[in-house]
Length: 194
Image 1 (cartoon, one colour):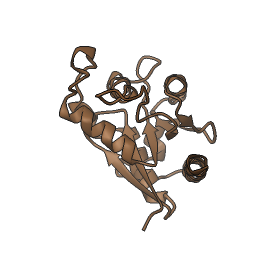
Image 2: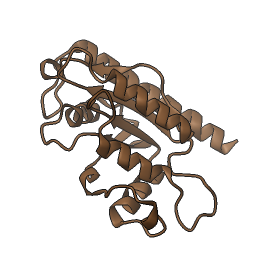
Image 3: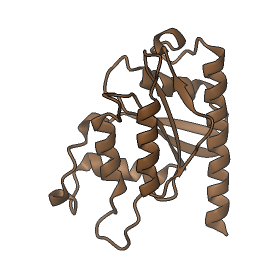
Image 4: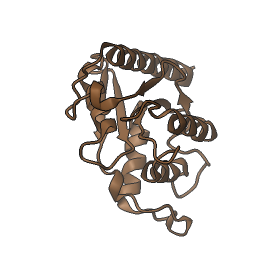
């Protein structure tokens, strides 16, 4: 049995997504202490609308509940037009808001350990999208890992669609990120218990 539950979100809706493959790769190489569940309902989340925030749609409620229940998040983001894909940003906008009725302005993302990674077929990878996510998570007071950075360039040469890693460096970085995430969870739990 695993010690920690990780909710993994791919920022791509594409069936053959390199970022979904990267999540599958993480599931393959994760230490026994981590149980990684892939979130698969990103496309069902409607555009954020504050007019319906008090009674959010079921997919939004489900996302918030899954984030709240998880010990940490693992985000795999593509980069579209130098930035975070709209579907991922939209989901995180919904998740950043408090649950109604508002008893405090704390979102499920507050103090949540978060690891960010990304894969792309280009030589630049997802550097800019990851930077934007790090800025977003500053506002939500999430506990974002800074190292190691997992930026898989030329992903078509390093990953298969089912998550097999064909590159030793990519595997080492991914394992390092997951180990660092497990450590961040332990620190967060110790802080919460103090």
